[in-house]
Length: 130
Picture 1 (cartoon, helix red, strand yellow):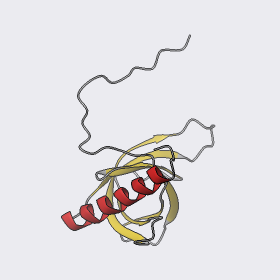
Picture 2 (spheres, helix red, strand yellow):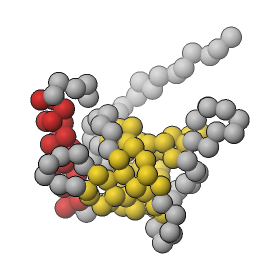
Picture 3 (cartoon, rainbow, N blue to C red):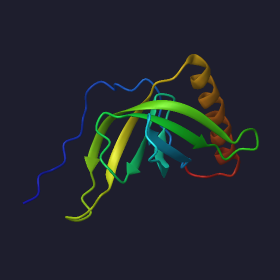
Picture 4 (cartoon, rainbow, N blue to C red):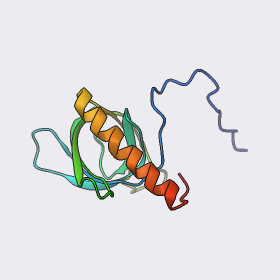
């Protein structure tokens, strides 16, 4: 018999609302040559969630996020891996659901907020699900 999944009913700890907008981005560990392209599952001014192909345990990452708007092409940010969970896809699966927290300056947060706002406006005008 399967256990019912527990739902957290405590106080919300997130400072920012997360939205499900798929942005393509490249992430790499600081001071390493290895890099990987991924797509966000959701994003906020505080961080993002995505699927990684390898374990990144508490790594500091450099990100380059491509923003699909006519006003800019990409934004560079630094982030810290705050959690990872192996996806239950099979015994040999190498996919990890990953949560990042941005380590940004006030200017980075303002730029990201501007891009998120423009992307939300575009989706609203196109009547897409957020």
